[in-house]
Image (cartoon, rainbow, N blue to C red; front, side):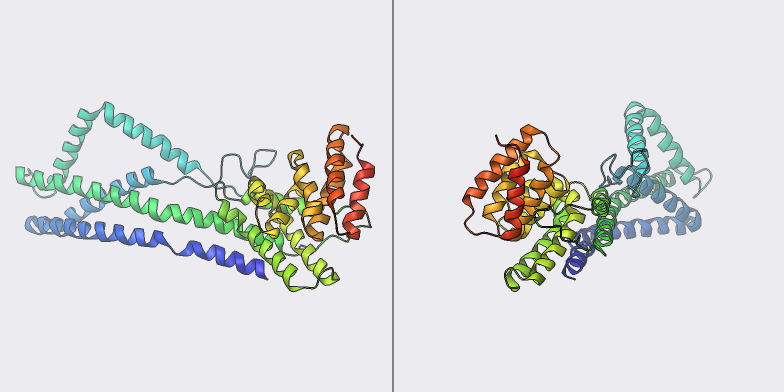
Length: 376
């Protein structure tokens, strides 16, 4: 199915790219530095016949620095606070756990604050640690051995910090993004599987989303990555392209063409709530498939601000999109008060006056809208 292929291609784009090149550049800079430092430490250990002790200090300082760098480099998760929570405040879809982020923020602020306030004490503590490392070489250590031990402690801690920070930022950030986007893609795929169009309503009756449509759309909305329009809109655009392919390739007004288009609109419902923040972008698109997606979004989550735009679809779009827009307006006019009903009546009446080509199903809905809505 075209939609699944598009999703696979979309997800695959996250498996390679500039991130790998950035990590390669960091390796080029850090690994020779680490190799040089290890060589120097081994020479110091060999001269003192204390290779094991020196290596242990190197490993300890690298680990301490890397841990500090990791804490400073932990990226933010993509899910905003509160997203994915149900009414009881529990995670309904496994929202990413941000406890480690909170601990990281807390610890880094404390460490920076304490370092500024207690600089002299920290300097004395570092000197004590360096002398303890020097004791590995000799007891008591000579001044030169204290100097070499200080270089090992400070140097390997700094290298560890750089490695921990840079690799966390370059690799873990991408891993978090891939994990969240892949989870979104899986949720979209699951929501679309088995989505069958609702039975065609009687003439003059609107198409309306089913409870299962709304449940699937809510699952996808909760899994959508915040602030990532390209990822959220990727399945919408794949479906829009599928709609346009059907529209161009199949004969006008054929039953099979209408059935295939209806299947596309049904699958669009699954991603409609996730795409709702980008409604204006889709509504203003020059592509008919994306404008259909905007109509479907309003079918799932109506906004009175778009009454005039929906009414314009009745005469500005081809029959299928016009029929979908008329369904939205008729379903809405039956549940709103007089003020909004009058707005719908006026907008639809104006659109009807501009229609030049009749279309039975759409026109039957228009007539019912004008009957249901109070005239202004």
